[in-house]
Image (cartoon, rainbow, N blue to C red; front, side, top):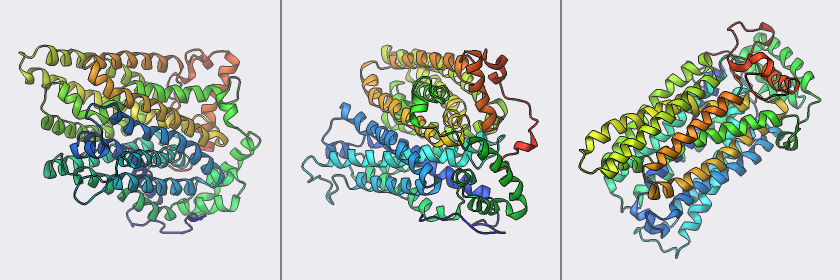
Length: 523
């Protein structure tokens, strides 16, 4: 194992002002930023003329969408491999392997069609390397997206898991913002016909995996994983690195009790994916959460933001500036997400988010139609209110749908199935976003503004499904959340309103059973 758990005793932090808990959140947040960086990076690469010539594709070619979307197929496969490794060898070795894979894929993308004079001598093989690089990088990022939520949730408190993960996803938006800012800066400075305007944003991404691989050895493995492998001594040392010797004793006793209750519950993918399996119900909640997040349509908005502002009547450069402003707004609004997710709950935020997004996309259909079909209307009379609605939709998605669907799978499975559940979440996310990002450019080219109306309908469906079938998992221990699925069998219903008298329609009270006090308190 190349990265053994940290064994520092007193001052375990890299910086005096940072506790070990802070380091865990900072590391996990930076890892999650990788996905956001890719979204912001590709949005302007897709419109770089040198890139299109190097790949030998047209600006409106469906291959543009294919290059973007194959990344998500890599994510789907990477999540399975990473979750297996996370259960077999530990969360940390799996994360390290994913970071190395991400770094390698990024290099393949950077060298695709590389030549010093900017004219590709690769005889059509540039696109092969780009596709391969996208897939390999997807393998790494998909694995990170599967394991990091599990890693952080196993080290976070029952009352602060949402806050921790939402803070990590705020860094996801920081990655998106960073990539788009760099991309826009080099595009303005070098022009859309310069190869370095698209290669530099790619290679700068190396900062993330290299930095994280150099720091991962300082972090503890999760004590829950050690206990699942009956490595009590290692679990004790991991707890000591966080709490010190005195504070770790009660936590160890709690984990031993939980492990005794779960030791005989071995769960495989068959139990999760086949009807009648012991974990089929939570798996369907997980799958539909990710499908519904994709159906919100905001994945397409993130990747193809400039094109959407152009549909509202703005010039190419103005659309790029507005997209940058939208990402700044996105990042700021994520503060509300982590402040509210453990107060209002996952379910309520998702319901409000669906209603808000459905209304926003319906209005965008109207403004897009006015801009496209009525050219005599002053462009700003349509573009300004349309942009305000798009900014509002960004905030609604970030608060209601970005972190919630990633958090729920880490809360509703037993320890023996948590990594697999997170992997299934990433698989569905990858396949759903592959479909959306593949079809989005085709939709924009053919349906124009009517695509917004499609998203309004899909958001309505997402809200209905969430209201009907998605339980509230916030504010409860892992074990308490599993009671919902046990009660669903007894009540012969999956409807949240009918299971256990509607107990899981909302979060429980603020009183926390001290016997189930979580591993890490919010700091």
